Image (cartoon, rainbow, N blue to C red; front, side):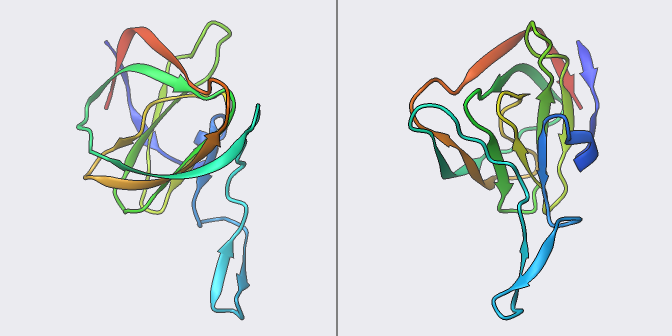
Length: 161
């Protein structure tokens, strides 16, 4: 089984797949008479297709143990999907490029506290994978008509560690 080593999540390493949602390095400015700072425009949210709309959901995920066997990735052709953690627990982010024949070999990232991700429309990615405890997430993605989920099962699984 091919081993995929987990790397730290950074804007540069995740750039081919989407946006890292974090305050560090983000454009910001004071609002509300200086009592609040707005970290502005952190991700490019996409929602296309018939009756497309952006929706906000709350997910609660149980933790996964490492190493993890990865058999499947998915993508959403009609909209991006953002995961904003509500705890300081890290989570695993898996992504893969499109090759023209399906997804490439995946890459894996571990978040730091205060980091979320926005996975762009049509990008192959793993499922939500909390690591260190039950974790809540705000998810911002697309609602509307049409099929917005494609799954790909690899011929051989990968071991992520």
